[in-house]
Length: 328
Image (cartoon, rainbow, N blue to C red; front, top):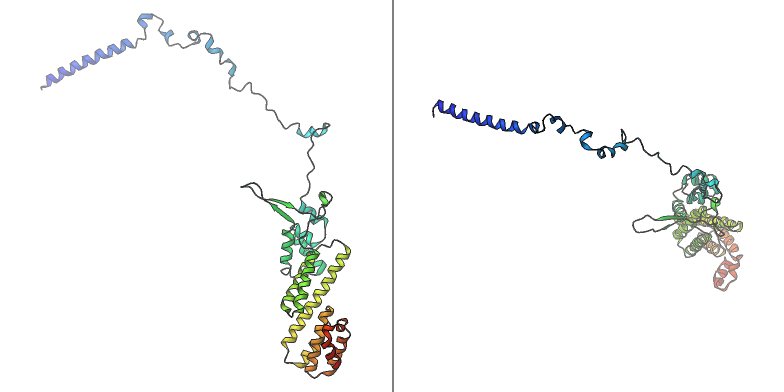
């Protein structure tokens, strides 16, 4: 197409656009022709066109919506004054935990261990019995600590409840004067002592030594209920010490069995340990045989004389031994 045609087409399009713009301009009149000079009133949006009821609902909101805030009330304000009213609930006085009472009410190492105060318990043992190697007492101390409480299972998924056990709660809860219940009693010491006697008489000296050593380790953790029981515990201490000494001498005798002089000497020491009569009889019989075998007849005769003085030699079961001692 030629340039003139193109100009003509553009002119048509321009006329069409001009007509469209004129139509849009008529629509944007917002009713000026119909309303006359009231065009400004149609877009005023003021209170005059909204009516009286539209603005009343927002009058109470205030400028910052917080003018009429209610004052905050402290619900716990008068709780501290409730105890002054007659018959009102009063908060109880806070008490001490049982473990704190146990350590404060006693100077016994077992009570301090039960309370978990291992440091003060070791200091007491060091001052009272000169204990220095506490590994020997480890099992007894752990037993005293674990035996002072009982663990009660709770609901599924919840933890157990630790309940302290007290030895002075027979007539009611002792309160701040409570003392722990210890796991070791006098009967445990008696049982250990009897086992040591049994092993000693049967010649099982290593087992006997272990039994007597265990009794020695348990004694510091036993709380005596009376003065008589305390005296019995002291007597057990002496018995264990004498038997352990005798067993150590017996082991030394076996080590120097080829040396007649040293063997006879140790056998004499063995008879001077404070043993039970039935066990002393065995010791004197062994010493008499050792001295006689090494041809030390004077020492053998002294052992035989002591052997005949024992009350158990009058029984029928020791008749043969009595005849041999008489010959020596």
